Length: 313
Image (tube, rainbow, N blue to C red; front, top):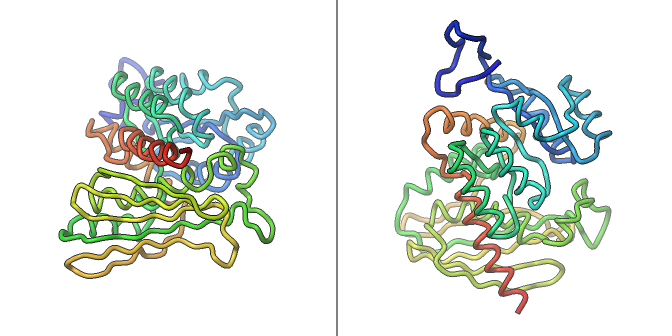
């Protein structure tokens, strides 16, 4: 069986063709259980083919919950699938994404795509070399109404400044940690790497490419970024996973010649993931790279790496 993303529907008589692309999931953690797997199971335009995880018992449990195949080897999943969705720590994701691209699979990546520029660039280069599409699931760029809001603001000019904050209580000083607290990479990398991509994913398409970055530390894992953009605008982003519960929250405000505009609230994250898969399939079908693809993911890694370098000095 095969599926031609450039020619949807049943193929010619020389062999049977699937009418929907097959999607495999790598990862079994809370994010996979709450978002990736439910969204893939509900997606009308694709077939949820199966799951691989580093913990076989967790993979079997999640696969059973959705009535799909459990894979003991990621390469076997790649061989069976047209698209690979990732719900893995970034430094586990990166080499597997390169292998998936080499196997001809389109890539639905999680953020950050990697925590080194070398690994992030390897993913983007592999996608280009093997002619596969890629999309990075950046929640605010696919959730509604935030995705539409970003597109609207990107059409405006005369921006002066912007301020963003994403203060998570994953590791709060008060109360119980969140369901995502059992995550070694989040503990090691903090809010800069976990929620920094979200803030940048909005600031860059609206204000333009980051041309300069300055980073300073605050309490807990708080990092404040001061950014200069190609438009001439300046922005700031305050990021943390260790905020007190009463202080946690997300916000972003843009100020310019046309006024003040605030990021709206959003919900339905599994629905946003489904739209990310739609975008990936569209990019695969048309051959037009999505602006939220692996190249953008690599650029985010470059910016975060420079910020981390400054924090270390």
